[in-house]
Length: 91
Image (tube, rainbow, N blue to C red; front, side, top):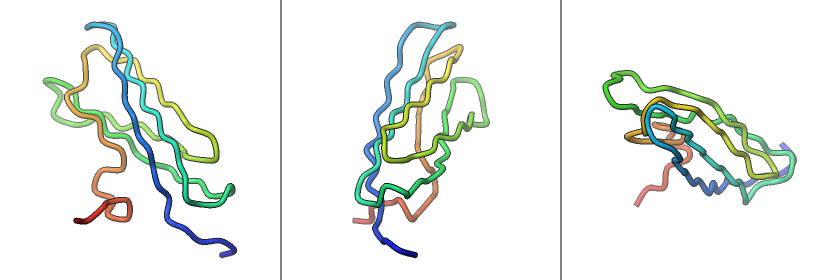
């Protein structure tokens, strides 16, 4: 390992449109690590009347990454890297 650091992730979401034509946009910007550091993160999308979440993946890097997903309904909850304690801030 040549460089170290813990990535800081700035995550934002935006929902556009109305059912049945909804677009979810998830943006992830990474900082605090070297330019060669990349991370694959799951994005968990909870939808109404759907027991299992929809999971999409996004890869971080030196540039901000944007994930766009077309949905039939507005999401109830969007979570990046659910359950990954390495990215969790403990207070």
